[in-house]
Structure formats: structure tokens, C-alpha cells
Image (cartoon, rainbow over all chains, first blue to last red):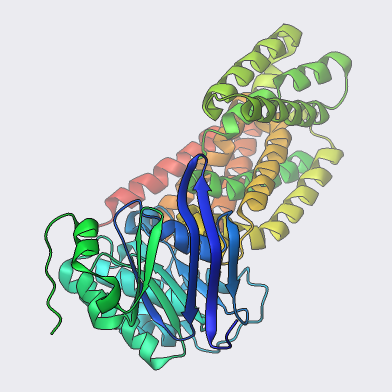
Length: 238
Length: 253
């Protein structure tokens, strides 16, 4: 494996019962990449992410080079779920490192991390229930949670589900800003083509047991885009 | 008197504490079937004159194992299996139970409480408190999202198993205090009261434990004053606390 490779996947297959979702996948990703993952629903994007996060049984090989610390933010974390618990943002943040076996690398306080994602009035937010934040604040808070402990790799599964369009753009630009500032490798599942073209050097395009990896201009041919988005779609790169 | 007070307050506190997770994880009714599973063991204890705590523990473990085994080998939903085993257990329990002593099994009898119960209650409470300093947040995190809990290193299945084991043990201890019919109530009601009162997780579990302990003490005081059975009075005290907090909560702006 090349020294600069952070993730090497070879012959990866994942099945749910009879149904094979990912078939014989090979992929090599370099350290410090910003990878967008796109594809139609049911193409195995979430399955891929859960597999590389080590949360699924699979066959084949998934090798992370140099034991990076991986922070995974699953889809469908909802405000409503948090509201079911008497819980403050400060308590939620304390849970982050509670069960970690490796030594904690960051000395940054919760306060600093929350400020770094552009949240204002952090003292007030730390005392609130996560479910009582606005949806924009909630997403930023989740990104901050994912950044606790200075991870090497971020795995974000559609971090903008349920956010209005304006908010979506700012969350992706926030993730991009964090990626530029730090030594991070980012994988983000998204449906937003403009995000892909604006931020990602490489895109992983998944569709029915097939996948293509490379720069957006090469991978996202009009024919594949049509297949993903259903209708005739034209995207102008400015 | 002092022994039954210590036992009651300790069991009330630990039940209220564990009950807070029963509420947030939406398992408030789990305590009910667990209590009912104890009935045959309690009946045998009364028949043959051994401590009903041991009968309750043995019967709950056996009942839970049967539910678990049937669930493994059949396609029925867990609720259906639980309902069948739980009803069957209650039926067997009633056949075994000497009817003139049924009251003791159903609503408890604090006259049965011995020094052993007090020591056991204190020991179990200390162990559970210490153990759950670590487990509690992990179970909450898994409740919010199992994926992030696993990613953070929480052993979700192990923690949930240990939690249910602790609940089963406390339910068995509750039998003498409130009887098999009201075991779930002593877990759920103080916790439900706590949930309406506080905004932090730390406050929630401590308030749950306090509400449980105070309910037990209040019920016992009423029992000594009126000579009515202690078990129902403890649950009524808990319910009174719940309604007071409810009224306060709804009067907030």
C-alpha cells in the first residue's frame, strides 16, 4: 500500500440476507481527500459508509492505513429524538469521549469546538437541550460533536437531511472549511451536485453493485447523472 | 421498624434511578411482566417457607430465559412471546399460591422484611450505582443513535443486558415491599415525575432516585399511621409526587 493511501478497499461485498448490496468493490483513497459519495437511493452509499466505519459484517478487505481516528455521523439524527431526553449539549459532548479506549488527543474545550463551527452564544447553547436548537444550530452542533478529539477521518452520511436549502449550503461549506484548515480526510454522502462540483476533488458514484471513482468531470457523465437523478439533467461547470 | 425503613428507602431510590432509563428507552411496561414472572417463585416460597426473594429471583430468571429461548427459535414478535409466557406464569402462580396468603404476594408485606433484605438492598444499590456511572450514558447515547454509540465504543448489547439484569434483580427485591402487581409502578412513577422536573441527565437520575426514596418513606409513614398495607401507600405517594410535579410543570409559562 502506498504511504499516502489512507483507505484501501479490495473485493468488498456486503449482503443483507439474500440481497447483495455491494459487490466486489475496489477503491483506494489518498490521505487528505474530500470525497463526495453520490448515487440513487438503494445504491449502497450508507452501507459502504457503515462498512468502512466497521459497523457491518462484510467480505473482502477494508484497510485503514496508520490506524486513523474515525468520526462517523449517521443519517437521520433527529431533533425530536434528543427532545425525549432531559439532556444538555454539554452532557451530550461529555459522552463523546466516555467510552474511548485510545488516549484523547485534543485539549480543545467543548466551548472552543462549538465556536469553531460558527455557533454564537456558546455558553447558552451548552445549557440547552440539543433538540431545542434551531435546525441550523443543531447541524453545526453535530459537526462540532464529530470534530471532538481531532479525528483524522470524517464520515458524514447526508448531514443536511431536513435542512432548508440555505442551511444546506452553509453546512457543506462549513465541512469544507474544516477540511481546508485541518489535516482531514472527508467522506460525505450527498444528493447535492453543486456540493460535488464545488468541494470534492474526487467523487464516488455508486449504482446497482457498480461504482466509479475519480474527479467529478470524469466520473459524472451525462448518462450516469441521468440514471441517478432520473430526468435529463445538465450541470454547467463555471 | 428502622430495618424496614432503610430497606424501603434504598429499594425505592434504586428503583427510581433505574426507572429513569425505563422511561426514556420506552420500556416502562417491561417492569410489569418481570414482576409477574416472579409469582410462581413467590408462591413456592410461601408454601415451603423459604425467603420469597429467592423464589422471585429464580422465577424471573427462568421466565426470562424461556422468553429468550422461544424468541430465538420462533418468528413471533417478542411482545407476543412475552405475553404468553407472562400469562402462563401468572396462571401457574395462582394455582400454587395459597389463597389465604395471596395478599402478601400481590401487594407485599413489609413485616417479612429482615436484616438480610436491608443488607441486600444496600449492597445491590451500591453496586448498581457504581456500575451505572459508566453504563448510564452509554445506554442513553445508544437510545439517541445506536450508530454513534457503537462508533464511540459503547458496547450496546452488553450494556442493555446488564441494565435488564439490574432491573430484574431490583424487581425481585421490590416484591416484599410493594408486591408483584406494583413492581413496575415503583420504577416508572418516580422517574416520570423526575422527567417533568429537570432539564439535565445528571439531574434526572438523581431526582428519580430521590423521588423513589421519598415515595417509599412517605408510604411507610402512612402505613405506620393508618395500618393500611404499605405497598399501595408507597405507590400512591409516588403518584402524588408525580401529580404535584405535573401541576407545577403545566403552570410554567
